[in-house]
Image 1: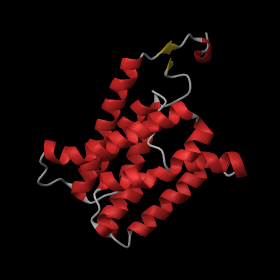
Image 2: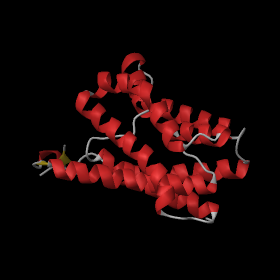
Image 3: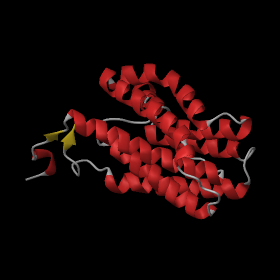
Length: 205
C-alpha cells in the first residue's frame, strides 16, 4: 500500500492547541538564543531581528507588526482557517519571545552553539506547526502568491529575499555573525527538509 493510500488520522482540537503551544514555545526559545548571540534568520523573523538590532525595537513587537500585511495574501492563498491559525501562531511567538527573557537567564552563549541549536529549535517548532496546518506567515506566503500569480518559483523567491536580508544584515552585524546566521539557517532548513515530506506524516487538521 502506498503512503497516499493509507487512512489519515484527523487531529483533534486539543491536539492542535497543544501543537500550537509547543511549536511556538520552541520557536521563541530559538529566538532567545539568536537574540543573545546577535544572530538572525530569514523571512519576516529576519526582518524583525534586523529591526531589533538597528533600532532597539523588541523582536516580538516587530515580528507581529511586520506580518500584518501578509494576512490578506494568506486569506486569498490558503483560506480563513489557515490564516487564523497562522495569526494565532505569530501572536504566540511574539508574546512568548518577550516572556522567555523573564523565564530564563542566559548570561553568555557560544555563538556557534547558538547558531546551530537556535536554528534547530526554530526548525523543530516550525515542523510541529506545519504538521498542524499552521505557519509563521510572511515571506513564505508572499512567495506562494507570486508563484500562483506570475509563475515565479516560490523557492527561488524565498531564497532571493532571504539572501537580501542577509546582505542588509552586514550593515548592522559583523560578518562573522552573518556567516553564523547562514549556518543556523542551514540547520533550520535541514530539520524541515528531512522531516517534512509528503506521505511521511498522515495526520491532518
